[in-house]
Image 1: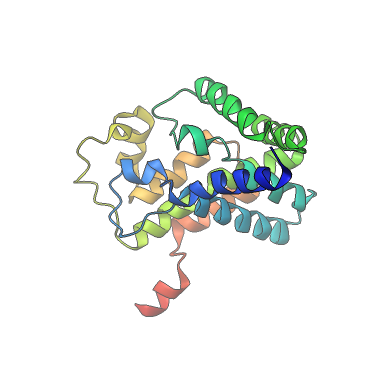
Image 2: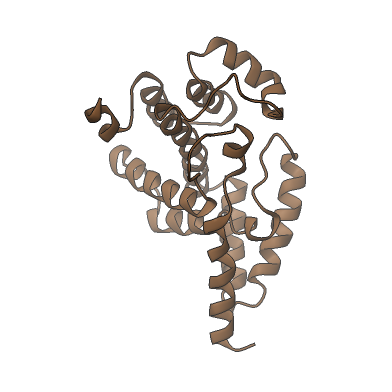
Amino acid sequence: MSREENVIKYYVLCNKLKNVIRKGWKDWHVQKERLESVAEHIFGVQMLAIAMKSEYQYDVDIMKVIFMLAIHELGETIIGDLTQFEISKEEKEKIEHAAVHKILGSLLDGKIIEELFLEFDSHRTKEAFFAYQCDKLECDLQSKLYDEEDCVDLNKQEGNKTMEDERVKVLLSESSSWSTMWLKFGQQVYPYDDNFKAVSNYAINNNIDEERKRSK
């Protein structure tokens, strides 16, 4: 296969993520004409990483972080978007790593890119851990944006198996809204540092869509 073919093949494959809708939003029957795609999540988490680096002055290589985040959902071009409520972390890693290895096999820099993907997945280096926190918080902030648009009706969740999760049940009973539940879930489940917790708490206590606030 020629280099030109490799470029096009990789581009076309990754381009599919523009049309892969984030599974969690479908599970929660988010009522919006156009739901967030995996590609849009990638963009959102990269922008969040830039802002977190800027405001909290993390000692990380931000370009490495942005590269990690650009490829962190690469496996979903093959396996789709799978949530933590439908597959174990271990099983997802197994099939996702195999998918990424297959995708990158023909690229000249494939091994280097794959190593960066695996570094992100390990959460062990300071860049990987920072990127991981950004990845998780971005999802919770998106839930807040959907909540502010009244996109989720908790009384219309037929078939939503996520609501059967015991942690979700408890947090829903204790929270004032759907997005508050998710923001608190993130604080409990993910190893956020104090800065990520502060941003999460700000989202709990404030409306975050400035344009929407001005229009009210």
